[in-house]
Image 1 (tube, one colour):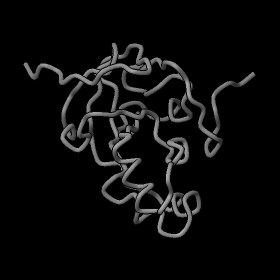
Image 2 (spheres, helix red, strand yellow; image 1 turned 180 degrees about the vertical axis):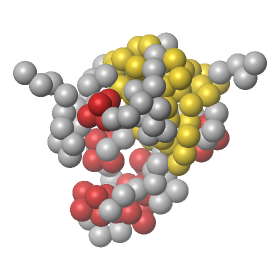
Image 3 (cartoon, helix red, strand yellow; image 1 turned 90 degrees about the horizontal axis):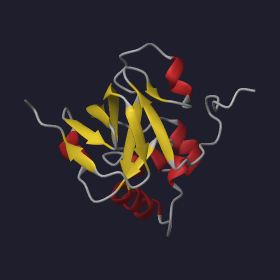
Image 4 (spheres, one colour; image 1 turned 120 degrees about the vertical axis):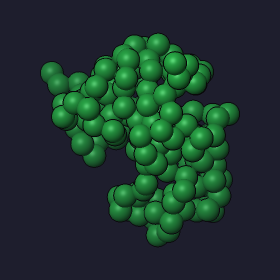
Length: 144
């Protein structure tokens, strides 16, 4: 039985995920892609989700609709760009902003892409693998 969700299938929330060095998150459909990609993990903050919901005129927005792997809170994700940081036992490196794709227009309705622009979160790669649990704090990695 294949328990890895296929592309475009609904996301499912899990209490923890195993980050695999150079590949991404165990169980994510992107795991089978070429190692070393800068888009192995995608992150978005609750604060960004609230901004997107406000732009769309929605009182609340299910994070799964935004197709990101991890939801954070209390940290400015844009400040992590091109930085290494720990999340749980895993070290990630933020590679680029995660811009919304045209699918967001279909998922969120007219204006979905515009509502997400600047609030799409970050793409990252796994530098050192390990378990990431819900509630794991984000800590900057020592640059030395």
